[in-house]
Length: 176
Image: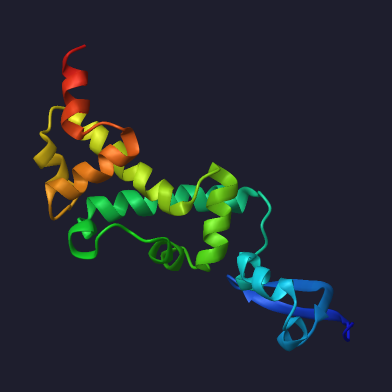
C-alpha cells in the first residue's frame, strides 16, 4: 500500500535543566500517502498529533500539578481583574501560561475532569458568581466584579449553565 519506514529514535531533550533520554519507534510517512483515503479526513480529529515531543497523555503527578496550576491561574486571572480587559480566559491563554500546547492541555483537563477545559473555565466563573450571590451581592455587583461588560451577558451564561437566572438563584437562596 505504501512505504512504511521504521526507525529507532535516540535522543535527548533538556527539560528544566535536566537531561531526558527519549527512545522509541516511529512510523514516518509523507502526508500524501493518505490522500484519497477516509483516514485523510479523520486524522484531523486526533489531537495528539499536535502534542509537543515531551507530552504524553497518562495520569501522573504532573497532570495533577497541571490541574492545581490551572485553578491557581484562574483565581489569579479574576483577582487581578483581567476579565474586564481580556474577556473570559481561553484554553489557548491558559495553555500558553502553563507552557504547553492547547491540544495537550485540553486533553489533560478532559481526562482529569471528564469535561473540556472551556467548560471547566465557565464552571469556575459560575462558582465565583454563586459565591458572590450567596454572600449577598446583587446580580449587577457580581457581574461587575467578574468583569462582564454587560450584566445580561453574565445572566445569559449563568442561566445556560444552571437553568435559572442569577436573580432566581439568589431568590432561592434567600427563601430557605
